[in-house]
Amino acid sequence: MGEAQNRRVVVMERGEPGVLQIRQEDLPEPGAGEIRVRTFVAGVSSYDVMLRGHWFPGQKPPYTPGEDVVGVVDKVGDGVSSVEVGQRVALWTFGDAGGYAEFVCTPADRAVPVPDALDSVDAVALVVNYLTASVAMHQTARVQDGERILAHGAAGGVGSALVQLGVRAGLDVYGTASAYNHELVRSLGATPIDYRREDFVAQIRDLTGDGVDVVFDVIGGGRQLWRSSKALRKGGRLIMLGMASAVKGGMKKIPGSMAVVGLVKLLPNGKAAPLGPGMEKYPAENMDWYRKTLAEFFDMAVGDKLRPVIAETFPLLEAARAHEFIERGGYAGKVVLTTDA
Ligand SMILES: NC(=O)c1ccc[n+]([C@@H]2O[C@H](COP(=O)([O-])OP(=O)(O)OC[C@H]3O[C@@H](n4cnc5c(N)ncnc54)[C@H](OP(=O)(O)O)[C@@H]3O)[C@@H](O)[C@H]2O)c1
Image (cartoon, rainbow, N blue to C red; front, side):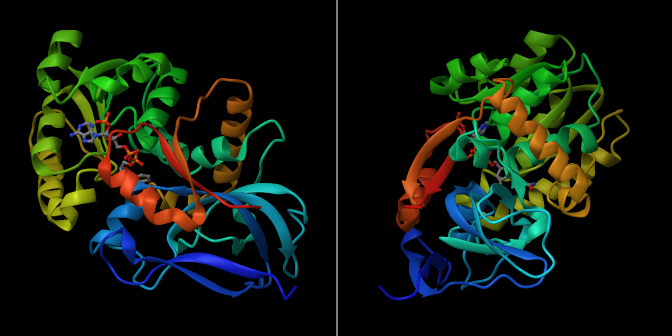
């Protein structure tokens, strides 16, 4: 047997899922302050799909996608004492991507131990989506106990996290989803709204009277965000935190989205559209918060206080199938890649 090798998925050029290729090479070596993780599972997101298919701010080909990973520490670089070889850890790669790989080198301070009682697939679903939801809810929207919120895409990765964190924060939660996902959304604690068959603004008015305090909009696009602002009551906040509608449409959704956010800020109607802090930047710049909050999410999942929703798993080397699955839609929760490790 020769030396162990690393296989990773590479986006060779922007395009259809077939641009995802497998590259085999020597194992990466952790530098000072870094660890090498042997990947058990890697998260797939609609952001990965957008970036593969369209020009978007972020990585440029050739690159390996993937923001969240769970695996075992396989080697540590000089000066690392926070984690040990053999420990199972989860990590967010932040802007570096690189998660779709059998081995990943990363700064050691990004690694958060995973409790034995938590499955790796469940753990990886709690990283980017739940931390993003938490930043949006507590740092950007600054929700207060008893407020009403509307989470769009409530059965999706971020949306299902927003619903559950909202319920736990004592909020009255409404969520848009397709009818086939309503039972799930209800079981997570929100009142579902069928955005395909109903006008969600009218539905929110019917259900609440004067609207919600916060709309979390992961769908994006000018028309969508404008309608979201209409679902707010006076003093309400519109939080734009994603662009799920751009999986097919690409960058053309962005100018209209930004224009509406600007308009909501400017109009003297008592509504706001706070943008910061960056959903990814905040954890990266507050590493103690990142590690503590993720460890809390893991404990809550072990105690059945959070329920990560898993859509489907695919072998790492079949990442193209996972991207096709996301492009087709009609699923709920997180899509996860698994390795043989
Ligand atoms: N800011 C950050 O750092 C950050 C981090 C993570 C994700 N994001 C972004 O957040 C967005 C969502 O990510 P995700 O992983 O949650 O995606 P996802 O799991 O694919 O969920 C999106 C959901 O939106 C629903 N949907 C589609 N069109 C809709 C519409 N017009 N109205 C209401 N719901 C609609 C679909 O649900 P149904 O099947 O029920 O229709 C789908 O499940 C992406 O743009 C992603 O890039 C941002």
